[in-house]
Length: 281
Image 1 (cartoon, rainbow, N blue to C red):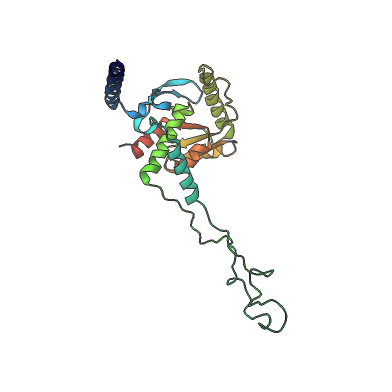
Image 2 (cartoon, rainbow, N blue to C red):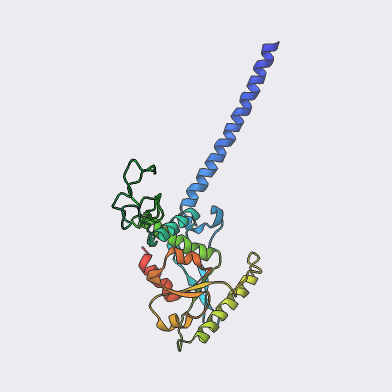
């Protein structure tokens, strides 16, 4: 009787295993179908976690802080999924490559003097020395000090660098920290006029954030901002020079470190079109 019981138990176990395998196959098939369906959609439509959809149609504001319509941003630049590791790698490479290596300590061969042996090798009772510029002596050379010949450069591929820049822009859009202006024109290069424009923009942004359940209570007034200009505008540059935490940069000079050093990014529509022309396919 015992072998019959064991065979019945084995058959039950086999049936359970078969059921599990069939369920697993069905799950795999459904996952493959979902993946194939998702291939038809751009991967850049996904935000955090790969499931949150990102709208690339944003509101456009005028200099008075009022909405002036909507504007469509290029998907391949402002709609990428953010890779924090790639952004950090690009920022680290830029900082390293811009480093000026000026620290330099002289070794014993570079310190002036010390060519004569201070005393004879034997017979004095003193320790043996060959030069008064030895690192053991005061006024001597430095062992393993900083050298200006050291190279701190870090190589990064051009495509990786550009992709990191796009991801930083996409992150600004995803976090609601990208402000698109209809235009930016100043009558005069006056700090007062520019300060009023920024006040209007941040006021409108604060109202928009108060309507969002995830951004309530976020301080706006003391936040830093960078205005990206499509072309050199001396009036805007001079007007923002004395504004704390507000800076300007040309679109050709846009880089990952400056993007990460400010919270808000202000772009006129002409700047976006210029970015589309430079980086677009």
